[in-house]
Length: 307
Image (tube, rainbow, N blue to C red; front, top):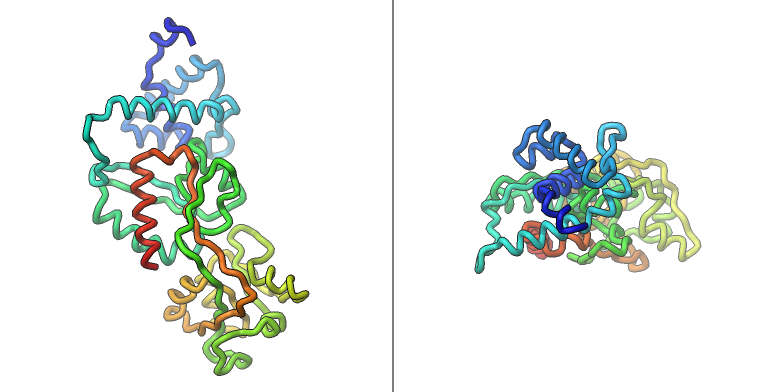
């Protein structure tokens, strides 16, 4: 870009572009920036003229970035971050009580039950106007974690496969089984054997449509398998069904302990052959130096130490 061209550019347009790539909505962008929808639409028109590209096109109910917009996403965020650092007053620090922001968090059932209640309590005590939007895990988490995708961070396991994502393990978790309190085939037992798991009928929690979990992997190593007779997306629903049937449900231990008093299920340990797994906080590398984002990650990490 030539110097003459740069003088003709309103850098506020980059602020609008960055917000549009995050929100994928003129309405939400206008709300977030305190502008009218007409002003944002006008700015988008100027951006399209400036870059010679549509930048965002409507698909269904959302606006989807073009390839050109996806390529601009990182550089634009970097430019704005650099400008913020230049304008930052010497000695100034981030103040969460003045923060006005919406965070979109990908959360598994375990995260929703054991992390979110404490997180919301902390946010209400310590932050300004912060909104948390929770979405379920899906196959496009890695794509949506970038600046243009709209997801700020993810909490769970098996979510950090993309090279641009940073995964920080918060704790290690292990699986347990829950069964009805009066289950006829587990009387007086505190642990289920792999042979029993093979013989019983099971409920599988499948929010992401996955075919199995670590129990199936352990059984396969021993040449065994189990019968899945019900697949549901939510842990609480699955636990209620297990409490009223003779089906067996496998859950992370922290989640099972929360659901036990509410559903009257009984917890059984599983054999050591079933592997543990890490519960991770995952975010895109472009968020690493964002003060508000770093503050939120720190709050979540503190909470994870106590769950």
